[in-house]
Structure formats: C-alpha cells, structure tokens
Length: 165
Image (cartoon, rainbow, N blue to C red; front, side, top):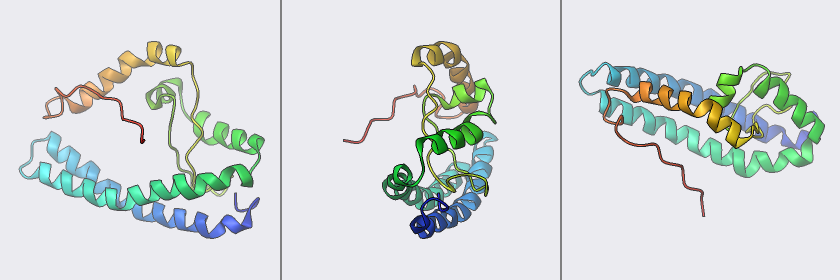
C-alpha cells in the first residue's frame, strides 16, 4: 500500500509496530490456556490476566485498523490489486477446511514485504453461507466442543456476536 500511497507510510509503520507488541502477548494466553486445561492451580486467574494484557494491545490496534487503515485501502490500491493480494495471502495458502473454519469473514495480518498491504483486515472470503454452513458447521462445532471439553465453558452454547449499533 505504501508503494501506491506514500502518505500511508506512518500508519503502516504504526500498525507493524503494533504487531510487534501483539505477538509476544499471545504466548502467555496460549500458555495460560494450556495450564487451565491441565487444571493447574491459579490458571484461571493467569488466563484472565493474560487476556487482559492481550486486550490492552490488540483492541486499540483493531480499532485503528478498522477506522484508519481500512479507510485508506480503497483510495490506495485498485480492486484488482486487492483481489490479487487476498487470493495470494488469504485463500491460496489455506485448505477448504481452514477456510470453512474461518467462515465468511476472516482477519488476516501479513508482514511479508510482498504483500500489497502490510496490515489490513482481509476482505471476507465469500462462500455461499448455505454451502459453508452445511459443509463445515458440524465439524466446526465438534472442533469447538473438543477445545472447551472439560472446562467451565463447555456447557455454554455459542452465541452470535451482536453487531455494534
């Protein structure tokens, strides 16, 4: 994107700096989740603290991405460039099962120099919702059931995330 819109360089650098802050905040969440699954004492509190730390760096980044970065994309790159980037980095590297797990919308971050945008939310990969639901829904539910099995969250039914007003 910077090649097409040099004025975006400070924002792209800020987004990449965010990534360097977010990445190390993920490992403590994963570790605490493993500890919780293994029923280690204090693991629930550790997971809560790790999620709070991750939220502190991730949520402002996501807001900046939506409010600032995504407003630049349509004026910085062509639709053809966007589709080529999306195909190369969001679709081709993934199998159908992975695309199905991601559903009709995904967020992908790329820091590779070949990417047209250094940081952006990908355009949703559209599959007929009927086809996606029918093909992937059962497997997806099984994956999440296995993920939460044996935890306090296991009996909680999945709920759709409400749209912001």
